[in-house]
Length: 375
Ligand code: ADP
Image (cartoon, rainbow, N blue to C red; front, side, top):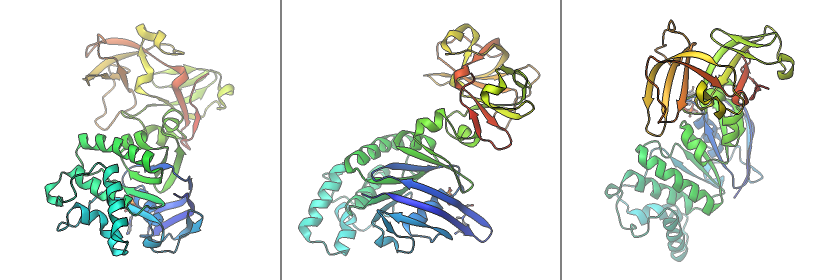
C-alpha cells in the first residue's frame, strides 16, 4: 500500500502540453479515477506515474519515495491496460504466475499467490484454460490476477474495461469495487466513461485539456461542480445551461428569468452568467411541490419524448419558434426527466418550474461556479 503524490507534473510534446502543472495527493488505499474527454491527458498522467514516460517538469512520489526517474519495475506498481496482453500459448496458471517465476519466487509461494489471486477474481478451476478458450471478461480477470500476484503498492488501470460489452462492463465494475475492498490497495484508474468513474471511485479527478478541474468524491462533483466544464461533463444526460446576464433583481436570460438578490449571491449587475440545472431538477408546474424551493413557472412546448422504461426524457422548447439544434442542446432547449407514468404528449403546451435549491450559477467568462443553490 502506498500514497501517490504528483507535484507540479507537466508533460510537453513538441507543440502539445498534454499535462499542465498537475498537483495531486492520492491517499494510501484510495481509489482515484482520472476522468475526462478523449485527449485530455489522462493516459499521459498515468504513464508518468507508471514510469513509461518522463515528465517534462515535476516529481512523482510513491509511498514516500521519489520515483520520478526510476524505471517502471522499481516503482512497486502493477498495471492493467485496455488491451489485454496475455501470452496466447500459456494457460491461465502460467499467465498469472509469469512475473513471479521470472523473479524466481519458490514454487510454494507462487502456488499460494496464484491461488489467492484466482480466488479474488473468481477464476478457480480455470487454471488450465488457454486464453482462446475464454471470454473477454475472463481474460481481463486473468490480467487483473496477474497484477494482483505481484502485491504492488499501487495498481494503475488504464481503461481496463473499454473492450468489454456493456453488460460485462457493469459486472466488472462491481468486481473491481470488491477487489478494492478486499485488497485495500491504492488504485489509480483511467476512463473517459463517467459511469465507471462515478460508481467505483473514492474520489474522481476531472481533467480537461491537461488541467485538473476538480478532485472530489463523485457526488460532490455532481452536486457541487467546481466549474461549468465539470457540471457539463459529470451527469448523464448532461446539465442544461442557459446564458444570461445579472440584472438588479436576479438573472435575465432570453427565455427565462430567475429572481434573487444579486448581493447575496456575490454577483454584479451586468455580469455574464450561465445558469445550470439538471434534468431531474425541473418539474411540471402541477408537480411543483416536489421541488424543495420551486422557481416561478416557465412556459414551454414538448418537442420530443424518449421513454427509457424507468424514466422519461422530455425535450422542451421554450418557444414554438425555437429551432431545435442538431448538435446537442441549444439555447432555448431544455431537457427534463419525468417519471414514466407522466401523462404528456409531443406538442403539448406545458409549464415547468426548477428547483432553486439545485440551480447553479457559473461566471460565463471564467466558467467558475458561483453558487449551487439560488437563495
Ligand atoms: P487521454 O488519455 O485523455 O485520451 P492522452 O494522455 O493520450 O489523452 O493525450 C493527451 C494529449 O497529448 C493529446 O493531445 C495527445 O495527442 C498528446 N500526446 C499523447 N502522446 C503523445 C506523443 N507521444 N507525442 C505527441 N503528442 C502526444
